[in-house]
Amino acid sequence: MKPIPAASSDPDYRQLADDIKRWGREFGFQQVGISDITLGEHPARLAEWIAQGFHAGMHFMEDPAKRTQPDVLLPGTRRVISVRMDYWPADTRANEILRDPTRAYISRYALGRDYHRVLRKRLQKFAERIAEAAGPFGYRAFTDSAPVMEKPLAEQAGLGWMGKHTLIINRHAGSYFFLGELFTDLPLPVDAPVSKHCGSCSACIDICPTKAIIAPWQLDSRRCISWLTIEYDGVIAEELRVPMGNRVFGCDDCQLVCPWNRYARATAETDFTPRHALDRASLLTLFLWSEDEYLRATEGMALRRARYPSFLRNVAIGLGNAPFDAAIVQALQHRLPEAEAVLAEHLRWAIGQQLKSRALA
Image (cartoon, rainbow, N blue to C red; front, side, top):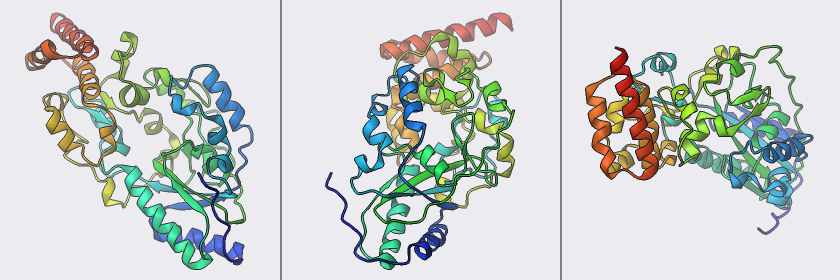
């Protein structure tokens, strides 16, 4: 990548920073913060996390130079403008769905339009507005789309602190928000980080269904339901299947139990409104989808990140954990003859679980 060009003018950068935060709110971001590009202890912590295998073979994490040095990823970068945007939909009945083993739980961030598209478009317009005032300047927009340590950068920019579940928490807004960044060559004044307020609370650690949060601020992705259901295409360890319950795409448990999320506000972004009643769909309904139906229903959604066979694998685990239902057994058996090896393994397991449930009834 070519170095970004130097800004063509010398505005009042303190006033510009104040204006940037105001414009950000006008573009639908709930908060904007500015940080420098040094990441303190985070590069060393990332290296140790990878060395222990906690990244679960996600090789895109193994690029420390670009991930830990913003000016290597984008030469000329001097500051990072971090933003957050609330995504929590109103009336999602999250806990109610988790308690109903016949329904599919989909992480609430994935129920609407793909956040990558929403934030990227908004960040581009945001940058163009900055350029109207500052003149042409170097920048690049990111939203979970490149080797960027967005959570440490957001923490340094004062958007919140890193919770023990490794997500950013804001004391006035909880943690249900997306992050995005503008890497820029503008020498803007930086914001101060906020203090941490988790205290002795261990609710997120205690609630994790698969015990993936092995210690405060340490997540073993290999046990994390979000990684298992979204990133991983293989056979899920049998010991983790029952704890997964009815979670078929992602997991919100550590956030649902966080005391700070009592301050979370429902998003005003219509793009994040749940689509196709996926916030309350039954497991069996989703399992009966053909691949074409799955692709149509998930078009333009982050949910599409799970390939169809992996999605069926996830739903099959949920069906195995559901109360006995002859219709469930029939549906599982119907898919078995043509299933790929990975899916077939989970179908057989789910059928066995259903039959155990019938025997115990």
